[in-house]
Amino acid sequence: MLDVLKRILAASRGGTSATRRMAAAWLFTLLAIASAPIALQPVYAESYPERTIKIVVPFSPGGPTDVVARLIAQSLSSRLGQNVVVENLAGAGGRIGAKAAASAQPDGYTLLLGGTNVNAMLGALYKNLGFDPTDSFAPIAAICVDSMALAISPGVPADTFQQFVHYAKNNPGKLKYGAPPGIYTHFAGEFLKVKTGTDILFVPYKGGAAAITDVLGGHIDVVFNPKSSLLTHFKAGKLKALAVTSEARWPELPDTPTMLEVGVAGFPKEVWFGLLAPAGTPATIVGQLNHAVNEGLRSEEVRTGLAKLGIEARIGTAQDFATALSEQVREWKVVVDATGIKIE
Image 1: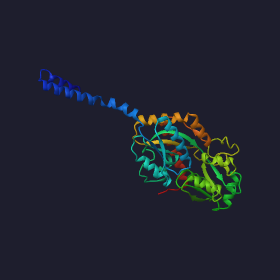
Image 2: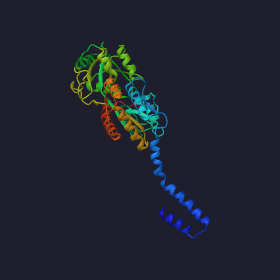
Image 3: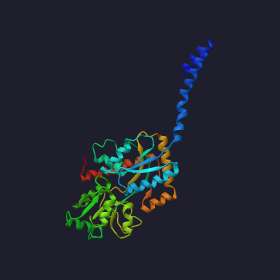
Image 4: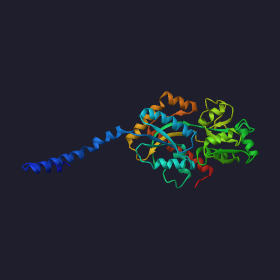
């Protein structure tokens, strides 16, 4: 570039007025090209967001993922000054919504509410997804972590984990548990069967909320669901809690043991929820969204909303979330492999 400028300047000296005007035009063009990347970069970053942002939830309304998405959408909208809407694209164990989000333009206007279900488990379950659960996304920020509980209907003649296992072994195939196929609640139930040597019938559901409705109504006997879905039913005495997957007992249920305490090892202790963008989304936008998510997680309204669900906010960098997802991939692959179930 410098050599070109020198030649233009040399040619213009002593030349005609037309030559000097042409040289000046070339100089102006070259200087504009050289300065363009510097000038445009901050303008692009500062202009985001200019229109509505969509958060794709790859599951039905009413479940934990949907509840967390709507809570964070409201928070982001107030902090970014733009509408943030939630779109439920349910089906195929989260694959439909996840693929749609992965295929979207990497411009920050289509995001995914993902985490354990989509980004940690799908790769262990399916061979041909049409996207990579890890590489097709840019982690933005973790939002919260949940843990699971083994819950049974009051009609099941058991009040402890040991009594439940004893009853299930003596009545093979009689008890039924429900979950959407291919997600963590399904594989938690299958892992429990492997670990306890019990025969419990799996009943597939389109969404986790429907399975909980049926266990409350006595149509099925067992669910393995997150704290955010079950805590209110435990407190109301509508379901019996037998064990929790967290490292420590839940403060709200101090008499309910952990899985380790009842002698069942290997359960992943946490279920992660977080926000992701399509791979290739500019780092400036990822950083802006990470800041907005974390700012919301520090606010009273979001913390109160999560507390009502009994779940814990997780504030951190995009890299922190990426690292957590990598660990979840490892943990849930162990669970999936132990069950022997592969979904084509």
